Length: 148
Image (cartoon, rainbow, N blue to C red; front, side):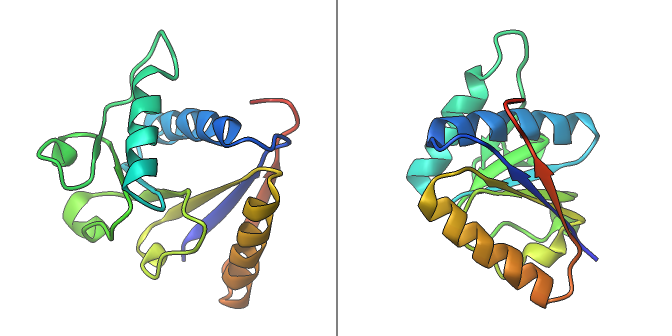
């Protein structure tokens, strides 16, 4: 069964959420997982793509937009559309930055959700938490206090 982790940030900004997403993505990939970062739309995918290029001056996380010719050769993909099944790509984890839960989330061994203190994000991610719990998934919260 898929493991669900919620990372709860004390900040309210999208910038803080994306900065933490980049660091979490790096951690997930460094643990040996292939990762898919799921976002709401193409604009957010391109924003996250840009952020992953320069979130740390001393490191680089190989990544590509889903559907690009480089996507099969990197450990992390970014997309707003449904990705190929993990069995086809070897992807084992998803970082969900979309407001909702994609229907295909249970294909992954691990799903990470990031919550910040923006009211819209709090509402949508509370709904996600409740949906996961109603479906019988174990959900774990990680309170991050000024650690990002």
